[in-house]
Image (cartoon, rainbow, N blue to C red; front, side, top):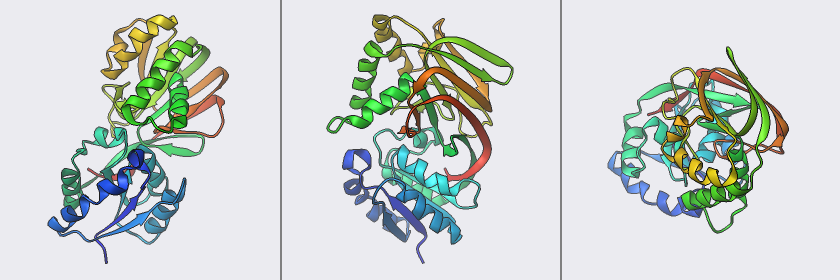
Length: 291
């Protein structure tokens, strides 16, 4: 019997995941790990595979891919005793970074070999879980734009989409409610963060931790278009939170209403269609992770 079951998304990392995964086999042998690899064939397949493995009582299911792959696998593992292992082979790998999983594949395998697990929080909206980030507004639109790019992916693709939307996006009158707090006014973005980074390294919530029992709710207010070109780069290091039209609150339940329907992303993956109302909730210690 294998020590690990690996669900590999060959399309992750701009299609480089399959080739990079070949580097892992000698490392598995070095740590005397026998791994069985299952490859995904399309959207939703990773969830199906993980559900089958968890239903059989497997202790660890490793997601080999990016944040989207982890998100799919986690849908089947939340609330079970099966732990999520991670091999970061995607373009962003924001959740792996939040958990302290090294981008170096040998070091990532070493963590799998140790097999130490801990419980992490998960967010949820629209009957779906997310591990790291949820965005509504300009960041949802950026995720939509990025998904349409065929040849430009990774950090450069996100930066291009960010600049494009900084010059184009119209602010939205929104109402945001959390425990004991309410905002009403024009916004560019609302992000409910379980980890610090989104979009391949944009630091929207510097103090967020995946196991601290709260979501970090980040709001970015309206700025003139040309001013945004100076504001949005500050989301790379979190310094945008020092601005007057930026807010950060901690909450376990959030309700968002927007004047017009907007794209929403969860871990970089778009929800179907656009939404004008959204309820977000945190489920503490709901997912076991190898970290």
